[in-house]
Length: 189
Image (tube, rainbow, N blue to C red):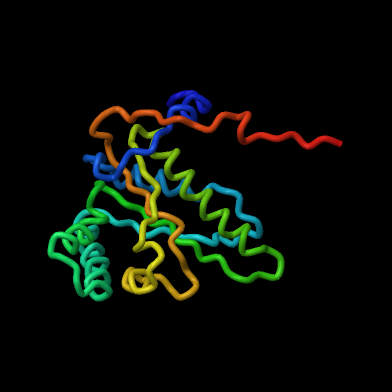
């Protein structure tokens, strides 16, 4: 495995449509999810869970997304509906990180939501460490209650992200990152 700092320095997002197979094996997926779940979790609430979309289930979920899209857009073309149908089939594996943050006597909801974000980031980094590439995205269907209901989320659950995982079709390109001088301030006494 690469040095941890070098691994973090070389992580890049790869567009879902640029991810091919083969995807992670069942054993690799178990490792990915185990690593993803090792995050700060004040109160040991596990205020998140996973939904795994693989194989034909990706298209079955896509049918649900397309149905909601079609219902909301009477003017939708067949091409647009087909695009929505294929949303979760662009990569060999998609893992939805579901935030189930809620009111708690001691643990603020914000901390619970941040924990779900940490889960998604751990999943992306673990995929990179295993030689895969990933893309953490949301898009409209992550926020649409009709889609969330169709995918089996309860009323208090939200999508923190869909993490698409596969093999990059080409080496990922880097993008410009913020300069530290633009994002770092030092508190002065």
